[in-house]
Length: 115
Length: 112
Image: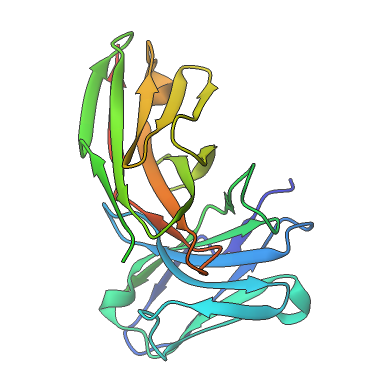
């Protein structure tokens, strides 16, 4: 399977705990993106990497959120001191340098529930 | 700020009953307009990219068109397997080269 993989698929955590999600992009894709999607809404941009460099972060991204992409391969998204408002589907996507023909390829997401 | 508005929010069609979904947008220099399909519990699946007014793309029963202010996704003779949420997104040409701004989607249900 050469798609985008995300782990775990589901995560339930207590408020105040830290959580970390992993994304493995399509191997030849050099761009990797994180989006967040809540029920009934479209995906909302969080951040993106080109190779290992984090090139853009959303103004909406709280300091409790941090993302890394060591060596330009897989990426992790960590949320510290989770809040109930963090409950959402966290989507990872990857692409070639240009979106022109194929757009992003999304993973199936990690659904986070903060209780 | 880039904005994408999709209508209707939900649409119920009988099998074979053709219709159109609308995506209107406001963006500072459109670099691309994207259509995605999303099934429950899954990530969005890429359908089309459109780049300039007048452009059209087709895939099976789906046809996407683009004007300077909006895009339409036409569904011809839909089948139950076309039931999904259809998302529209825009890529701006203002330096945020890879960020997509999504609409809230149209939930399509096709019944027998």
